[in-house]
Structures are given as structure tokens and as C-alpha cells.
Length: 255
Image (cartoon, rainbow, N blue to C red):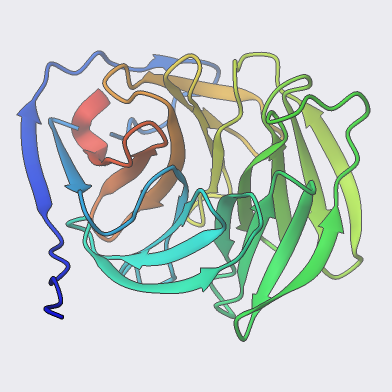
């Protein structure tokens, strides 16, 4: 029987856009994000339902979490380097400890954060949200300064701070300015935090206590559920759950 070869087709397009600008709140801070949008679509690799992005400390590739309990390593053109985990979990977010390389995953189905260790998942913490809404649970996750920041998407839009050493939730914040908390990214450069909001199609920049510093609209991203800050390449990486496109958004976009 003749075998059919599996062909991965990568489609790359660039768009020149007029930057809508950011709305600043509070202290004056540098404006990051794009004078063009580069998006890549992998049509036959099986990448679909993109829900989370993050980067290792050397910014050499992207970790990408997808529906179906899948975790990939991606090149910046959207092509797959490797599939590094496949399970039955409802994985929605991924983050990395830049010092150790430890990978953590948020599971919406069980409201649990896992540590990926040698291809196996080790439970870190289960987050209890009273009156939690189905399919509106854990959607964002980021590591920063010994803590995991864990976002509940909606009802409530709340971020929990889990300390890895003490193994306790030390703080929680109710976020009133967002529609959906779709992903988080801790800024290792200054300790601030970026939030992806798929409902309002915004990226928010906050201080360490989640006071809003800046609102950056991304109306061209439908159902944006993945966000990573890339200082090496001077851009944000934003991913869509609707079509699994990845946008590269240069820091200069909203200047």
C-alpha cells in the first residue's frame, strides 16, 4: 500500500497597519508593540486551538499549548520543532521558570497547575473558585520571582499568586478592567505583568499589584488567548485560539 506523505504548509503574511496607540494609565512608561503584523498559519501540522505561549530564557523558540492537552515547541515562522507533551488534560496556558527551565501548565478542566517533569505531570496546586463557570476557568499562567500568577478567565476575573517555596496562595486580585483574562506574561525586565484580553481585544500592562498602566488594543486578533514578551526580538507574540495564527507585534507599534 502506498503511503501518503504528510506535508506541512506554512503560510506567512505581513500587513502594514496604522497603529491605534495605547491609552496610558498612571505613571509614564515606555510604549511597546508594531508597525507591521506578521502571522503564520500551519495548515496540516495538527496545530489548532492555540491557547498559550511562552519563551525560554534564551528566546530561541516558543512553547505553545493547544486544545487536546498538547504542548509544542515552535519556530518563529510558526513551524513545529517538536511535540513535547500530549495528554487528556484541558491545557490552556504555559510558563517557564527562566532560571531552571521548569515548565508549568494550567489545566482548566481540573482547575489545576501542573509541573511538567520528564514527560509526566506533577500537581502543583488546585485553585478553588466559588461558583466557578464551566469553560471560564484557568486560562492564564506566568512565572515571576518565585511565584506563579494564575488567571481565572471570568466570573470572577481574578488572578491568584502562588508561591512555589511556601506552596501557598499568598494573594489574589480581582481585575475589574478586563473582559476575559486570557493569558498572562510576567515581564522579567521590570517585574510588571502583561494581560491578554480576548473579549475586549486588548493587551494590558500592569504593575506588580495589578494597577493598570496602559491599554493597548489589538483589534486584528480574534480570540487572542496567548501572549509572550520577547526582548531579544523586540516584539510581543500573540496567538489566536480561533485560527491558531501567531502575530509578531514589534514594540514600536503603539508609539
